[in-house]
Image (cartoon, rainbow, N blue to C red; front, side, top):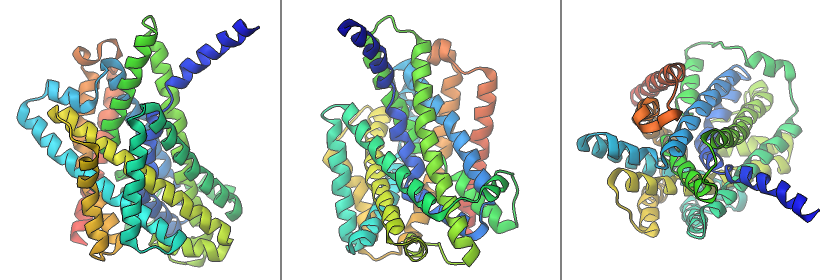
Length: 414
């Protein structure tokens, strides 16, 4: 009997080992910037742009699968493969923009965490930023005791975010006909097009494209060392389950944000342009429990996404330059701009918008190398993309790049 139980547990444990990397990546899809954009879309246009969230999530599924597959096939991450395959000047250029992306990422996440602490405890934003930075540093400290601890902690925070919005959706109620109508692709004027561009263009986060390949590569090496005869197909299946489950949860949270805003704010015309306004509106319409769930979800997002951003920064420097720096120094470099913004009293929403502009600029520099490398059989071997997959990925890369540059232009000209 004991032998039978052990034989059942062993394959279950093997499958569980492939879960984790995509949960870390999925945090980027429910970061504070997503909160602001989704609630703005739902409050202004109701369910109209729900299909944009669905389309963005499907794009993210493919891109993160390609990133994971690169790590699985090579045992290395995207920055490392770029350093191995591209000319030195190209690699240095990719590194510079990737570092700017890491800083912009931390700016958005720290501000989100600071706002959450202000909503929950009335803390001043600068103090909230310091606490968020410290919490993210503590989360990263788990990685030094084994990457699985960090992944489990981040996955737990993702579940907190999802649970918060499932709870709020249950309180707000669900309009099934409105949701069904929101799945039909359409627009309602130029403002809806611009907002849809913001949702779709900012869906893919370059820093987790780099990071996901690194985490999956680490998993693949561990599994191959423990099970030398384990085949590619088994690893691929595990990777796909990881991506589907984690990004499915992130997509559910994003859709719930828009659905709540469409249900509560759109009919009344109440403002949801800032995270503070969303918190206040949910409290007045659904009660303090709903507002508390929103603030806790935002806090979990800020803490988790800030730690993920710093972790990605380590991967970026190590991969592109084959160099590393102490974690405390890396944390300080990415945290400093956010603290400067908060101590200077800059409007948090404005800072979030500009951080998304910088992130948008970095999208093509992650997507194009990813598509090129995952199609190359000298890199991927038997796991190289098929022609169809490459064409679809290239179309997504081109579409998202165009949308992001359009979004940048609109922000700069506003």
